[in-house]
Amino acid sequence: MLRLALRPCIISSVVQDSIRILQAQGYKVTKPRRQVLEALEGAQKPVSPYDVQSTLRKQGKYLNHVTIYRILDLFCRLNLAHKVLSSGGFVKCGLGNEAGCHRFMVCRCCGVLREFVDEELCKKESKSAVNLGFHTEYHLSESSGLCSECYRKRFGE
Amino acid sequence: MLRLALRPCIISSVVQDSIRILQAQGYKVTKPRRQVLEALEGAQKPVSPYDVQSTLRKQGKYLNHVTIYRILDLFCRLNLAHKVLSSGGFVKCGLGNEAGCHRFMVCRCCGVLREFVDEELCKKESKSAVNLGFHTEYHLSESSGLCSECYRKRFGE
DNA sequence: AGGCTAATTGCAACAATGTTGCGTTTAGCA
DNA sequence: TGCTAAACGCAACATTGTTGCAATTAGCCT
Image (cartoon, rainbow over all chains, first blue to last red):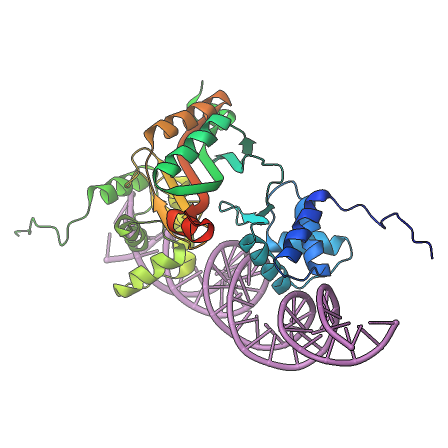
């Protein structure tokens, strides 16, 4: 019998990698786990468990919030996801942040947030950590202050 | 009539400064605000609103949690306190962090947390921000990874 | 392909944390 | 000392996170 060689849908290689890791460690590859992986993969910024839930719900997929919590816990233990401490949101590992580093600036007045990259700072940070016997995998840096606009409003020029 | 010159208790100058700022801006200096100030002053690390509540309760002082939320909001608006994003906890401004900079390392395995200071990184971070038109008042940096012990357990030497 | 079993999920119930509206209390001032 | 706007406490609710247990299912073994 002839089998179709085409897959029913295209699954990103990042998701595929994660699935392989799950299997390799003896975890089952379930529909909920696949769906959470895809939700993380599709997200452009850290997402909370409830974000994941509503994202999936919009696609007609319902997952209980307890399930999502447990799946995200598992992914973090397996290093497939990271919890971003500033927001409590989760990000897919290695997704959009090759250097494992997030650097944000938040205006304490208007709340505007900007993300930026600074390779040199990343390296220096890791080095500092190594000196203290710490193996860094992931950075998060948040600067709080005033954006140029709010600064001007407050202090004139 | 003769009045006693002694104050009933000694109030730290940091708390006094904050009280002056409250008054200067036209806010009332109430007992709850004083108590929250002292709780922040006494804390050695960031505290959540509920931390503040239980700390005070142990001293026989009861404040409604709503009140504490509102007071902490006010303090942040007046820059008397900062909200540490990683933990959601609050710290007294200028308290133990002269440089306005907190730098943490967290082990994703055992959870151990270490705080350290790196003046050079602080300066570089501010400079990066300035280049983007941002006036930094406060840094938070969190490195996630493995502490030396967990690293050894996992990867041998 | 069909059944077995442990792993996983869903559900219900609860705990913790945070928010809103409104009546009561109080700090600061005349 | 009394007045009044600001601040507080309370009740009720919203959101976020946790636990125990029964129902379901992925992966394996015929």
